[in-house]
Amino acid sequence: MADMFDVVVIGGGPGGYSAAIRCAQKGARTAIVEKNIMGGTCLNVGCIPSKSLLASAHFLIQAKHAALMGLDLEGSFRPNWRKMVARKDAIVSGFTKGVTGLLQSNNVAIYNGTGVVTAPGKIRVSGAASAELEAKTIILATGSEPVNIGAFPFDYKTIISSTEALSLPSIPQSMVIIGGGVIGCEMACIYAAVGTKVTIIEALSQLLPNEDEWVAGLLEKEFKKLGITVQTSCKVTGVQTTGAGATVQLESGQSIACEKVLVAVGRRAKVDAETVKNLGLQMKGTAIAVNEKMQTSAAGVYAIGDAVATTYLAHGAFQEAQVAVANALGGDEKMTPQAYALIPRAVYSFPEVGSIGLTEKKARAMAIDCIVGKAPFRSNGRSVSHNETIGEIRVLRERASHKILGVNMVGASVTEMLAAARALIGSAESIDNVCFAHPTVSEVLKEAWEDAFGVSLHVPPTKK
Ligand SMILES: Cc1cc2nc3c(=O)[nH]c(=O)nc-3n(C[C@H](O)[C@H](O)[C@H](O)COP(=O)(O)OP(=O)(O)OC[C@H]3O[C@@H](n4cnc5c(N)ncnc54)[C@H](O)[C@@H]3O)c2cc1C
Image (cartoon, rainbow, N blue to C red; front, side, top):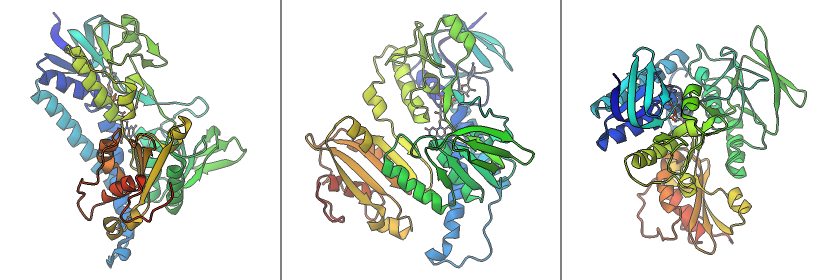
């Protein structure tokens, strides 16, 4: 006899667990099926563990600047990698238990095992707990996996993915990171801070290829100060593992010897093949094809998060989950291109990068006439006090409509200002009367907005 539900969610990552909690809160009898540890990539081997290690690494860099802050600290500072990883693991464990508790307290039934949709409305769970479930609605939130490249496949020891990089047994002497995207840049900062000789190889012409050239240029300059070597417009043709590590071959003929090779060239949607076959799901490559309501080609089946290969971001998965849940329970919500354009992009490198809406290069490509307002952190009182003066904020104003189309930021803690930046996007409303606390780093956002209108208080006017 099958267990009956209104909604069954397969996958307990940010997409799946948030969908399940919302469904239950809206009165639907809900179950979630997770084959691993609750929390998915984000909590176990993604957002949270990487930010925990980044926080330790940042602390170490700050401590090295103690003298600049007027502090005479005795002794030397060394990373204790084992303790850094243990701290990270404790943080992860706290959050994964927390999510399980949240699901339970919202009366979501939890099934530990692999969920396969055997027919419309029918799910088989196998593993630690075997069960047959039936549901009016199914939400697929099965996530993604690191892209494995044939020319240098993972051996998970020397040629590793971000998952292994988050839990290496010791600090490697040297590491080549293939891919200068978000994960590559964040990992480079962690390892450079703890003393690894890091080289990033990026095939395209800049780090973070989706961001503006000035953003990547500034990041590259700061990475150099951390001892990170960056080679852009440079392709890796192969990797040979050796007794001591590996040799990375470049298209240029050059080769680099290193202890570890981290392949960070992106992630790929992952969906159980049997489910795809049984439902006759329409696919887009390895991802599940969905419409704006997050509906798949099968009636009553929704898909969200990395499995649909839209944002590959936890907060993208959260947004899509809300839309899928609303529609599953009789609503009419959409993830339109405009909604996707408002999903913020955050990189927790040293310095951080935060952007939302259009970049300058995208505005140029779309032939939108924009005025760029700029404000640097070096003239902000709080930033100077904190010795965090690197970077700036740029606000893009459409010349004709006065609407703010994009905010692009590089600097310490800029990711914390993304929500405020979001409030500006699409609006021509003046923020002159919005009082920003002084001194706060966020005043730089107001300055950049003011500069876009030629009325900056603390930045000398420039001709726009
Ligand atoms: C190193 C790293 C750092 C990252 N940092 C950030 C960040 O700072 N900010 C950000 O927004 N994003 C970040 N991401 C991306 C983020 O982790 C993902 O976008 C997010 O986890 C996607 O959520 P999801 O729910 O779609 O999938 P996932 O989190 O991958 O969850 C899918 C879950 O489904 C389960 N599952 C799969 N198939 C089945 C099945 N058949 N039965 C039962 N269970 C199944 C899996 O075990 C998994 O737990 C990072 C990723 C990595 C790798």
